[in-house]
Image 1: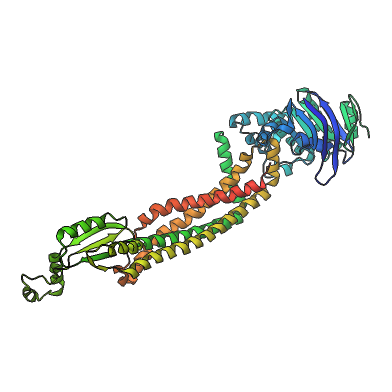
Image 2: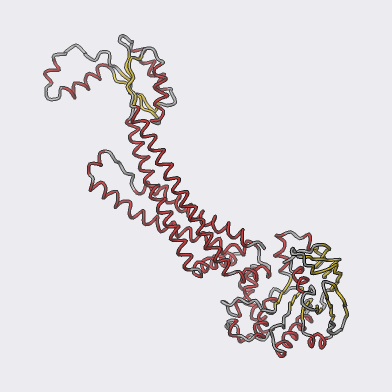
Length: 226
Length: 302
């Protein structure tokens, strides 16, 4: 499903971020990507989102080579990905319902489908009662759940979560991780970039450890390694 | 594109205008000022052109013939002149008609003096053609041609009037064109600036839209709608003002300066707006589209 073949990325400033990465993630897997700051984790996510282009090597997602993808094909490709960030990135001037519906409006989903799917997604993340609330009226955990609902509402095949618990307390962090696990059980491939050692150790998933742009370990049912 | 997507983009475009109220107001005001001046110059140019056309219609070249030129020869010359590209129409005045016309004016009230000429036409060699041109500026060409015809004795022309009208029309056209171009450039700049501020304010939203999979067009459309609406409003308001003012101003001029009645003929407002309304609106919408389109292209690379 996701394949990195000898992928390197050096920024225009000359800073190397990835150095000949080889990686294969199968459909339906739950994978943690861990490592120190500057290890290349976020670059990897940005390459998958087509926010960045690799300096060399090839990336395949669902058998499509990203390097060969034309500009006008990028929106359609991104619709197959869900993405969650550490800082939630919700629209502050819109309520919970509108934030989730926004993801569907953007891709031209008919209004009747939006009216059906948004409440269902709110129930999934446990925020059905708060659909009228604005982001500033929600706790960090609730905001991240809204972000998660927004990422999932278009039923993506792959969910990319970049430090999803970075701004949350342990209780809310676990709630988010349980949700991610639930989503993974429904068939969505989940990639989580994190620093949270306790969660990684407890969940016993595949863990890819990165250091200075290289994969230093890749183990199934593993824990956090420095 | 789905109908609800179009509605969404329209709504967002309208919301954008209200989100940046001050900038939108500044853009609409500047646009309105530009289109107002444009409308003003347009009306003036149209009226001047109309007056020039009216005056040009009255300008003609008159040719007289050598004594003894036969009527047949005069008729052939008339046909030759009528075929010239500069010529709109040719009117023949025979010697008898010329004398009758002269008598009416010169002996008015003293008709008995005219009887002294009974049977004798003092203007016997004054049959003539009055030649009306399509454009007063073509007079020189026509006169050059007429001078080559051997049986023509005299050519009466009005150089000064013809050239002055043509030159004045061109001058007014150039000056107003230059002013309008400068104003329109300012309007494009201001609309671009407003849209640019809107994009900055909504940068977060735009980046989320892109990551979710919005197409370039979906991201740009609300800003294009915003620019077009600003242009449309900025054009509609001054056009309505000009429509209202035009009749009043023309009425005032003719009322206060009644001497002008004989030399100035103004176009009715409906005739001016027949072309000014579509031109003004298209200009407003076009500038709005240009300003917003250039800005979105610059700032919204996915």
